[in-house]
Amino acid sequence: MKKTQFNNKKQDLLQKKVMYSLLAAGFFCSIGIASTAVAAVASEKVINGDMPSGLETNTEYVNITGGSRITGTVKVINDADNQTGAHGSALSIRTDEAIIIDGDGHVEIRTYNDNSYAHTNAVRLHNDGASLLIDKAGYNVTMALDAAGGQSTKYDEVAGIYVANNNQNVVINADNINFENNGYNRGYGIWTGASATNSQITINGNTNFSDSASATEAYAIRHDHGSTVINGDTNINMVGAGGSGLRAINGTVEFNGNTVINLSGDVAYIDRYVPAFGIWNGATPYGVTPTTGAHVKLTGNTQINTTGAGSAAVVTELAGGYYRIFW
Image 1 (cartoon, rainbow, N blue to C red):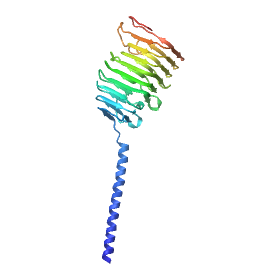
Image 2 (cartoon, rainbow, N blue to C red):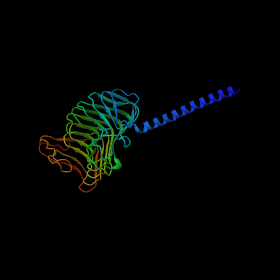
Image 3 (cartoon, rainbow, N blue to C red):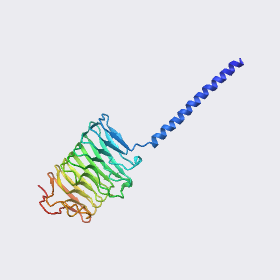
Image 4 (cartoon, rainbow, N blue to C red):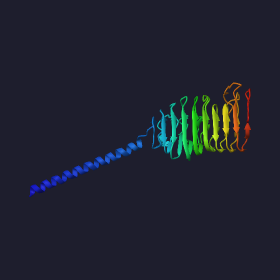
């Protein structure tokens, strides 16, 4: 009888020991998982292939290194909680293969700057011949620049879409395409760079450009080369100091729809010029050749409203050679 009670007690203690061990293991395991989830922040996500279920990430930045078809909702949020080191654009295209974003769902790509990082575009095409098709008929596409605290202390030149090199091609089909600049100095909705020879951006849909009052020297479009065509109504609302609707130095810009431009910051203007004059604030000249020119075409109803000291609707400045305002 005593032996049986002893064995029962021994077995009961063993069971409790096992239970406590499992509980302890589970407890520490759960702490380990929680800790990993908080501490482990991936700084880069690499894509080199199709993603049929879409792409939703707040990874610091996404690099596309090979041809990809991303189908469904796309949300790339480069935010304050995912800053782990110097980084590139929120979505970097580093291949000359076709990148296609289509299917159901909206597209939202946001970059973030906490004043210690530079050149954080929302989308940047790097390689010569790179191409991007965003086919989202029935949905919205948003490219946003979000500065820390609502205002950047830097003067980095960044854009919602930056076409950087030769023979690059971007096509966006959507109901509404939104370019937001929330506090970036020299933040642009679209930027075709000085090396973007023979590159083209085509936007099919209603397009909205905006900046915040804290942004300075920001443009809806900075056009250094190539061609930009917007087939749809365009609304530009720039309120920061020195904000411009359009700055065109070379190439062709077409607005094939009704266009409304509202500029309310001091020294705010829509300008298009070929400067030996220099950049907006009169710093180092571009030194372009006299034969270089920019052409701007507006085919629909156009309304330009400006308020603020030194503002003007249209400013043209010539370095020489032939220059056309409208055709």
